[in-house]
Image (cartoon, rainbow, N blue to C red; front, side):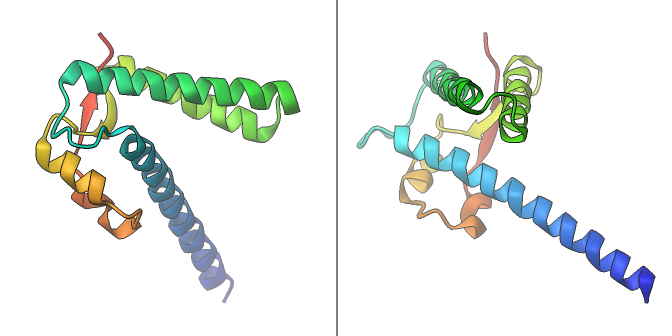
Length: 131
């Protein structure tokens, strides 16, 4: 009985982590969706890189504001860690994974996306690196 409860707890934690990852991805997609210019069919690589730089800058400002307000809270530390990871990815070989707005079909899908988690996989992503 104890082993089953332990397994159930582990399965619940794994599901929660998976849902958290999907939720974070949805927030990222929503941000990019809000940046889309109506009528623009696709973006050049350098435009997507500039969007990512703007995204990281906005997250930096949010973390700084939270740190100023609450000090080194667990939330601020977690957000700072995620931001540092994102910056590292942006500079690394694999790049920062974002919607591939260089493709017209992805821009169209993202503009039509209503925020449903189950449709996230239909939006193609790509790793973009900072030059």
